[in-house]
Amino acid sequence: MMRRQLLGALAVAGLAACAGRRVTAPRNRGPLLWLAQRGSARVYVLGVAEATNQSWQSAPIERAFAASGHLWLETAPPPRDTEAKARYEALIAQLGYRAGRGFYDTLEPAVRDRARGYVVELAIDPSEIEPMQPWLAYYTINGAFWKKYPPPQEVEYLDQTLGARAQQAGKALHYEFPTREDSTRWFAAMTDQVQSQWVTLLLDFLDDQKRGLNDDEGWMTGQPSTRTIDRMRSKTPALYAVLQRDRNIWWARTIRDQLAAGGTHLVVLGMNHVLGPDGVPQQLARIDIAAPEVGDSPAG
Image (cartoon, rainbow, N blue to C red; front, side):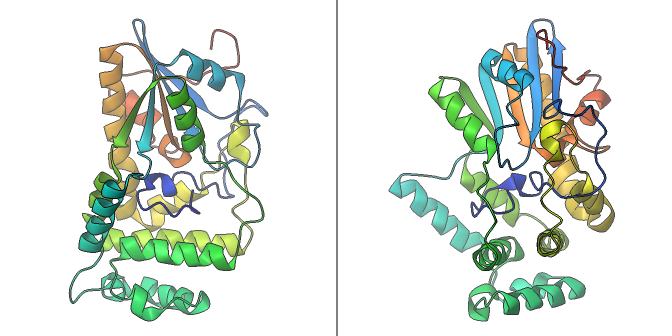
C-alpha cells in the first residue's frame, strides 16, 4: 500500500508489511480474522497487507465473504467521471498548498534534513515540492522513489480485490471515507506536528525498503509483523493517535452499530489497524464487544 499513488489511501501505513516482531499464531493458518456477534448479527474483521500470491485466500475468509451482505473498506475508489475528477483536483489544489508556509517550513528540523536528502536522491524538482503541504508532498516523494527503485514484483491490493468482488456479487459497499474529497480534507486537517510525523513514517519506510526489510509476508500465515505499529507508537506518537488509535475507536463504534442494525458484515482494514494495544479488536473489548479470532473449522 505504501506504493500507491492514490491520494486518499489512508491504509498506507496499515498495509505496510515490514520485518520485525511478529504476532505469534499457528503456522499456515491464514490471515488473522475476528468475529463479533450479537444475536443473529455478525461482523467479521480482517486485517490485510500487500499480497504477492493467492495464499491469503483462506477458507475462513472465503466463508466470511460469502456470508456477508455488506463489505466495509477504509477509502472509496478514486473518482472516474470527468466532473468528479475536476472537483477532486480542485480540492487538492486548494488544500495542498499554504501561502508562506510550504513543505520544509512545516517539517521538524531532523525530518527536514532527511526529506531534503531524498529530494536530491530522487531528482525531484525543488520548485515542485517546496510549495506543497507535507501530506501532499508525501506522495511526490513516494512516487519518485518507486520510479527510481521499482518493486521486484507486482502486488495485489486486497481492498481493491474484495471491493470489486463485492460489487460484482451485489453486496452493499460502505467506507470510512465515502469519497476521496473526504479523505483529502482529513489529510489537510492534520496539524503541522502530525504532518511532519507523517513524512517521518514515509522516510522510515523508504529507508527500510532500501535495506530489504519490507518483504515480510507473515501476515498471510497469521503472523503479521508489528514493526511499523511499534515504531509509530514510540517514535511518532501524535501521528499514531490520529492515524491509528482515533480511527480504530471509530471503527469499533461503527462495528457496534452494525451489530445493532443486524445482518452479516465484513470489515477489511490495513493490517496495522488490527494490531497492538489500540487495534480494533482491543477497542471492541473496551466497549464490551467480544471478537475472538476465527478458526479454520467449518463453523468458523
